[in-house]
Amino acid sequence: PRVVVHLDMDAFYAAVEVREDPSLRGKPVVIGHRGRRGVVSTCSYEARRFGVRSAMPSVTAERLCPSAVWLPGRMALYVAVSHRIREILERHSPLVEPLSIDEAFLDLTGIARDLADGGRIAAVIKREIRERERLTASAGVAPNKFLAKLASDLEKPDGLVVFPLEDVRSRLWPLPVERLWGVGPKTAERLREHGLSKVVDLVNAPAGRLARIVGEGSAEHLLALAHGRDDRAVEAGREAKSISEERTYGEDLTRPADVDKALLARADGVARELRHEGLVARTVHIKVRTGDFETVTRAKT
Ligand code: TTP
Ligand code: MG
Image (cartoon, rainbow, N blue to C red):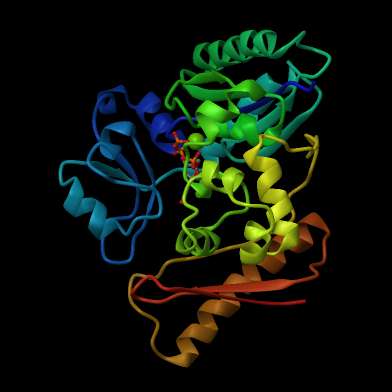
């Protein structure tokens, strides 16, 4: 059996800011730009108690938590911290797959004797991150990626959950279907319309029922996950698959000429980055968000 760790930093940008300015400790801290156009990048756990969440419009966050300290965010600093954390992970396994700026999978198969030993190594990693970077992380240790990622989220912040296959029934089955990898809001809605709202409902559904709702391929995939099975390998050195740039504007862009100008500026930034990396692109995506936070995307290959 494999030993896979998923590690995710707690309230990452906000935690870095609190570390840099200890007077912020214990306070609701929000990273983002205030005002009508802003959205929340993330916030401290103190702010989450007021209901503030990532991707929420800033006006909503300001209403929920008027006392919050707002900071614009410092990307270069977070990237530097992220690189140092990755170095810590890479000292424990040659197989590290970064997923985003603050999370990664580690394969400890052949390094840890068993899951419990994987848990011990995860605790060492967490301690090193705490000592070197003065930041907390949450880790999940499981026989595969899906369960490891699920586990790292169960006891956030500063969590460490070892999740053996035997725990699937007690800890995965009661969860909502959204927790299965690949179930977005639309699929979840469809499943719920058929009375399937929890993972256990999928497991207990009569054979063929799920396939009629989501199609045969998806049904097979979802049932495998529901039973805690996931064969995806941890892939080291997987490179970024896309380059993008986005900007939020202080005022609505209402004239087509202004939209064109803004789009050209974003395209220019992306093209510069592509040239810098010596790459060409296969597919171009455009994402537009309207004043009432509706998002439209289009792609052309
Ligand atoms: P997350 O790991 O999703 O969030 P988090 O680390 O802030 O909090 P948690 O303890 O729940 O893991 O994202 C990592 C960072 O990515 C986050 O600190 C800020 C950034 N981010 C955004 O800028 N916008 C977003 O919508 C999300 C979800 C994250
Ligand atoms: Mg995180």
